[in-house]
Image (cartoon, rainbow, N blue to C red; front, side):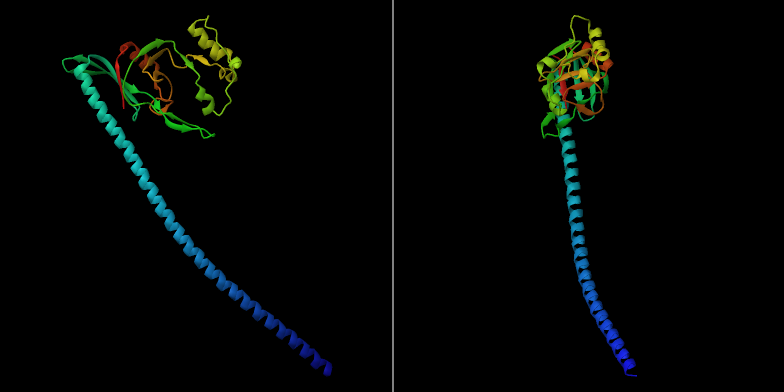
Length: 268
């Protein structure tokens, strides 16, 4: 009988101890839960604030982006207005062919003033102009914009060479070759043979080491000074060049044969 009472007492103590431990654990868990709820509320409020700030910054960014686009459009309209004034002045004081280059729409307009107030459109089409500021992985920056304003044809030529510029290697993040590493295409062969030699006799890796490249600019060039040429090139209708004005082959030939040295070129 005594052993049974002892067992009951021990069991009761064990159960009581378990109950106490369970209550303490429940209290601890309850405190943690309350703490987590407070933390969650804080985080939720913090997230709400951050979300609001993000939306505000997004609105500010959109605002300035629209302002930037508006400023670009305003600058284009001002350049267009200035170009229109220059064209009107040309129509009064210049007789002959002249060229308009629209860097915003990447179009060209060849016009001819035949005198007595008669100014006609001769040819129009797409061209490519400068792509603006660009940088490479090393943080080097170049301005590849096509300069706007009134320029003149200072020189024309046939079968021009493209001389690989120094910035070519930096823009491509390549080490420029040593002078004795350049490949020279012999000029004792004809122009067409030089082009065939470049494309057919050299591999792609070898062509990079040709500093004086035949055919890259097409069959004609029109020099506007300051390193700005009108020549053949791809990407017409877009701002993709390094500052020069790229034309299709037939358009380039038409300009070459129409524009004399000294002809005005209005770029806007």
